[in-house]
Length: 298
Image (cartoon, rainbow, N blue to C red; front, side):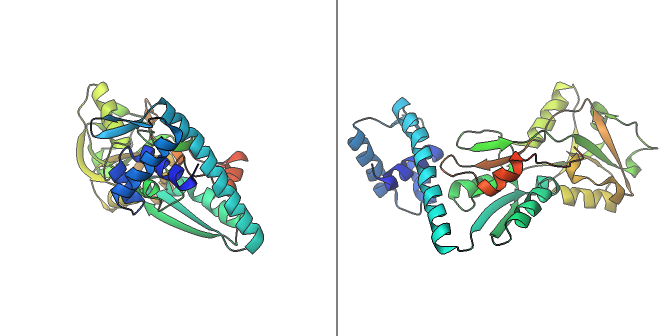
């Protein structure tokens, strides 16, 4: 079986579209379709069925996809390890880091560098939806992001949820709030909430919880970065927000109250995410296996 055809097949499964897979592979659609057809002829099975605008793997196709991912991982690992042994070259890790968990994942990345000073570490910091796209395009090896809302097409290692806290500009209240602070009472305040550039995420989860509690939240602004929200609240924006506790340092917020929330919904799930066709980075997995996160406030 030709490995290139197998790799093309896996990419089509992950995209659910030959045209989208062709774009990610930087090739024209007809040659890619021909490679898939050749693979079906070689195996004498149908690998895909059409569902509306998407194509999905048949039972045989899904089996080949799972096995194919394992084979491609083994081939990539073997090639990389052989090259490292033979050439002793600097390796490169391409990691995506979401704004949402910059503080949470900081110790992990610092420890990764400490243990591998010879490794070139390239980190792209942006929002989770963009990092998912970069993963799919092959522009990064893995992403440290919010656990995918829809997990199809991704493998991930999920960490324990991070406690949610409310940050309230002091001008919003007549005095210090109760701690914990009522989740429904937050709906009475102007809110600035995190919102992904596209697709669903923590914002939709929070709004759904407000609705289920029978209240309508007054959201005055959406921002993609926790740091920007905190800066603006501290600067004087009369509003409140809900953030993962890992990203909030109460000692640096003299103009805000930082309180826990009751009931405390589990919304923020950090995760290490990759494509099924890519291998986990052993250097990172070693750190995680030894008990990361070592110290968190959440």
